[in-house]
Length: 348
Image 1: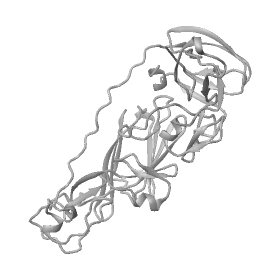
Image 2: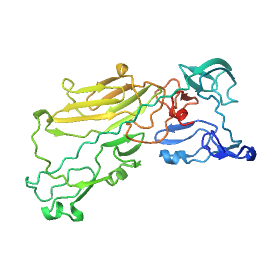
Image 3: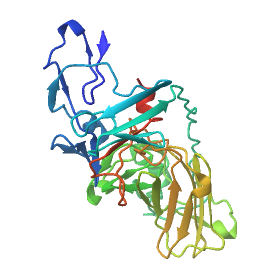
Image 4: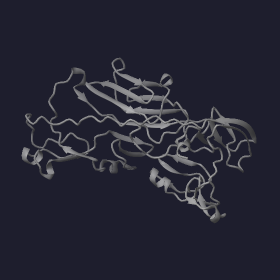
């Protein structure tokens, strides 16, 4: 049995039963815009990657198991006419670019060897627990995100009953391209009211007063800060929303696969975290700027792959590269860029 390589099909088939109507696929590249996902060849738009992958094809044709440009150690001369064929019209820096440009002949060498770095499991910190020797005032609300329960007494709020169970989010809020959710779980919504109703994804004990351990004067209150991001073909633009950050005593450290952030704010507040990045970055050419209401970080991509998520511990499925020349965004154009080191090749 052979496997069809058409986008949106990828079914197994028998060549003897193959005909002009056997394959239902998408002939055009994907498009992601303002939180909506779809294909340029049809009108349906969805909000999640699972729904995007389930969009049925819009064109009938024959199944094929032949890639137009297989990633092998071979030198080939390709001659294309746009837009009649789906072959790449040109290659720039090892990246195939699909557009409606003039007829172009070029020679390309693609390496067959694809190496993948082992994905390290994220290290999760132990949640803080209450010091049971510290008294708790009645009606004190649990400090864990999305819990909302109030202290009644030790038997009720710290015992074994249902009111003693804390259901909360251990991550931070993530607002991206109109969708809203938490970094610790996969559910995303569009409306802020719905975001407030997202049920916690972890269970534990309530946190009313904390551990009571002494901390340094400059980190008396560890706070959480919301972040947002978007991307271009070459950069990830990230914003961390924190007001009046101390420029002298705050730091941001760029690593190839991590971003370390330590922000100090008025009233002895501090935001400190490490973002495990989805792909490698060029740390030497990445920059940041501390503004009045936020910190803007510009991560230089080390390759041409589009990031379906900012962090590597958020598994959102496939990773392709969508790009246009010019402008400030990666969607909405007529060109489709597929990096030769894309995971799509590694899966074939």
